[in-house]
Image (tube, rainbow, N blue to C red; front, side, top):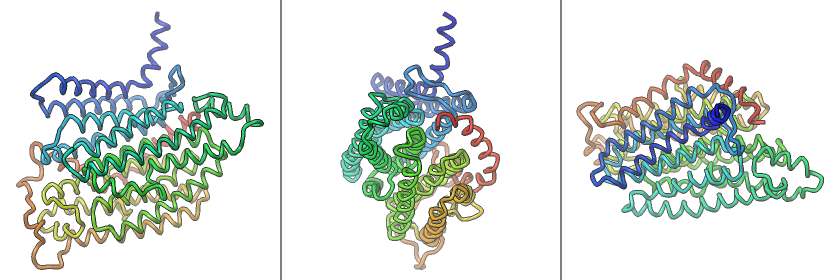
Length: 502
């Protein structure tokens, strides 16, 4: 009996973080179904409490040995737990910034919390997925919740339109990815575990049709590129982001992307089909295209939400630099930059949400003179977007510097040069926003700023979004100062997980 318990404990720890979040989800479900008078505060407390406990469990398990479930469908190593931490952190911030939005728009509380938690659980499973079936199911769990989140308000025509557009595009990308998996399944002799797929391909390499492997490789890359909004598979992103509620856009542009990056890293480094150099070349082309297109098109945007849709496209291009290096230093730079990106991006979204709720507009020109009316919000927004642009000495500068250095040392000179060039381009359109916030061409403020209402004190009892804005702004300014101890710690964990990545 003791032997059975000892065997169960490590396997139970593999999915314990997901189970805690799932428990919180079930409690919210139960309250919603059984109680006529729901306490909104308790719903938020349960969701945030479950994510907090999940975070603590993941932190204590970072340096433990890799554990694989008996079915080999999930692997709990340091690499997957780091990405799970990032997913949980960004989801927690997304819940905080959505509280005021839900209250002001008088939309339902339960549905967005349920969809967000379910999407988070799906993303956490994706980070440790080690089986083609598990990947497909987890991906659909996360994707279906994303579609539902886009239209949870129900009455907004634009959000319903965004969901209708998102559903077929997301389904198409998932179908392409599943088609690529089917070729791997058949070519490996009916295996679904990724390591067994590799062994099967090596065993049957003399009779495998090379065309089939090429098709599998192309379909997998295309499917993942769709999910990451890499050019030229990004067309769905701007329209869907512009029509969706702003807290949902924050979740889609940060949380869901983190899980897909973890999945992409694990798939490409485990399977390496058809060869390492080929998939690195394809990803390099996609990264260059995304950085160029994302930053150049962002210059022409007049909507803040639409501009923030093109910004993640270029940011994914930067993050790919760390992925294609294929070594622990590159993975570390990628993870550190994603950690910084959470604060920079979600801080920007929090400021946009706060401004939008008080003015009802997301047009960039309507931010003109914001500093005069609300200096604190204006400064926070400026610092977050300048950090995204990589202006020294803000956090984004140190993150990009470390990322580009790893790419240069790995020999991707053209990629790094283009990344530096596009970063300079991004500074241009970010500075346009800064100029609009700080300076008004007219002596009188625009009507939106004139009617802008600010609270007498920055911190009020239930004004959680102001706390998040402050937290993210501080992170956007000072996190770069701790980049060395942070990267040493992350690299140590990554090196312990090298076996699971190769």
